[in-house]
Length: 391
Image (tube, rainbow, N blue to C red; front, side):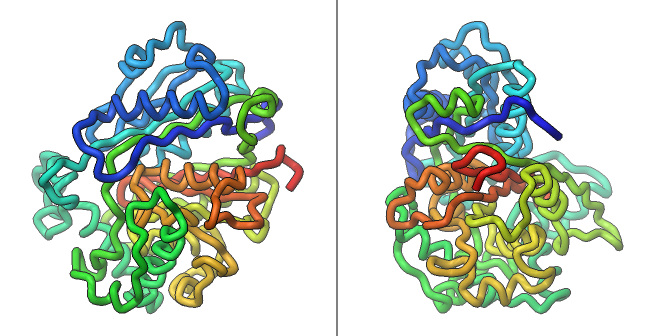
């Protein structure tokens, strides 16, 4: 696909993230978009497109336009691909800009599942679907929430390829090492592999330190044309390529669930569009709702061979100082959980060269993944501080 009018991310807005109580998702969203516009050096009146990821509770919707006092918006819709939504929104914004549908598009995700006095584990307990007949069998078998379902995927990978709990632990330790360098991270205290192995079991084989955080807050990005971005306040982060893949797994023999994810196709399409190979990627910002997700995504993107992800991460490749710096802000495991905006926000920071103590020296090409549902939906972005074709 050839786009005559290429796009770039020109603004990033982040609210306080984590245990922030007493605020609504819409209120967080307004703050994040306002900050993103200011970050880019734009007025709110410059924004003529708005893409809203409504979150798991559908708490933020098109009425956000009124809350922002936007007028004559040319592009306005919600995008619900769950954790893949951030990547999807940037893709749709880029296409809208190329087509002349809008000039400046704000993309936002906001959530406030944490309630004061309640555990993080209870944050999503109210999200239940009525199930009857055969469709109720997984829940009857104990597969009631994301940890149990991802545990099945992780166990299948273990049984097929020999992946171990200690190798999953290496992902958690690496994420925490990066988070220690990130002043915005919720969890910065060091952990060891022993800490991982001694953390309580959530859903076998996933332990507490295999699971992501729960956070309140919002993140927004501003997407505009590369030409306009070059005139604004921040260094542009150019969108070189993208892809999506939504496997549609079936619960029957022959399914690749747990073994191959949407990252395999989505990543290949994004690399092809960008005109680069996987070996050209400098930084990886991957959706890490669980440690297993990082590992299988690395395999499916081609950073290591299928089934070798365990050895790859255990060898220190993704940790600070490793050959393949990954989730350099601490990811969703240790930094903050804003669905796909977690890896996207860190990708913008790294591409701009604004990572401080955690900045990766070589950051010409950054790969970003988004994963939604239980490996059901996937989006990929290739970002760069340079205009396409120059790295």
